[in-house]
Length: 286
Image 1 (spheres, one colour):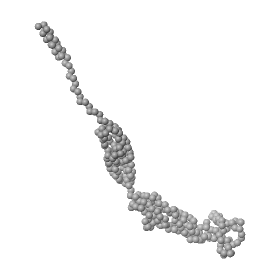
Image 2: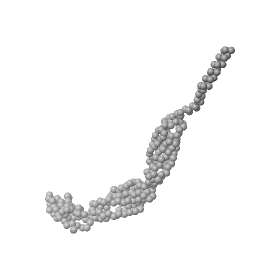
Image 3: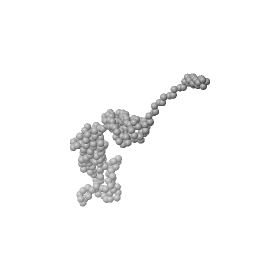
Image 4: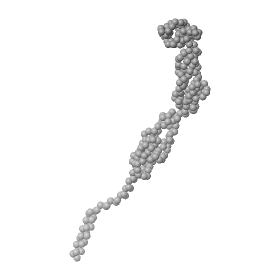
């Protein structure tokens, strides 16, 4: 076989026909039809079209002229969950499967209502992504329909979100009946004001709860005071943060002070002793 090549004039190509769809065909006298040669190659730079041939006959350059036809594929919805006021991105891929250039109107339906349309023009064989951005102010699940492709996304009511840190247990050692102070820092990391309930557990038993209301971005310390009447080691836990403290036996009460001995008055005592001795001597002489 030999390679048959034709040069073509792009200006003579019918409007809407893609140059890449040009082919060389031979005339079949038996069927009375043009038969497309296999292995046709179009060079868009040199404006030539070539194909291998094995015999001589009438040849011609033809172009497929099926009307533009479109397919919709690859529906994506991101993210699948958004808060009220946040946007969800919806996109599809549009492909022209026809032979001629054409335009296609892409309609976005939300809950069976058309909310937006976009038009895309594509040459034969070309594809193009088409994107939409949708925002809803009511919580719930929404159904998406683009060209028969279905999907859903969820719109949520914004929630406050909280984190806790910096658990403190002080003092770490007390006596029976004394108080121990337990505190933790609570921060609102969400987008709206909310209320958080802190739960204090001692040895896995809930002993007290406290609520704190915080605006978005605010933080506050929550403090508890507790006491134990039994000696032992106790674990304090506030919503996953834990530390321990020790309770010891109370110290025995101090003894009352003893009265101090009066000092001896040695001069008087000496005088008394001397007097007794003198009296004793006088009696012995009588």
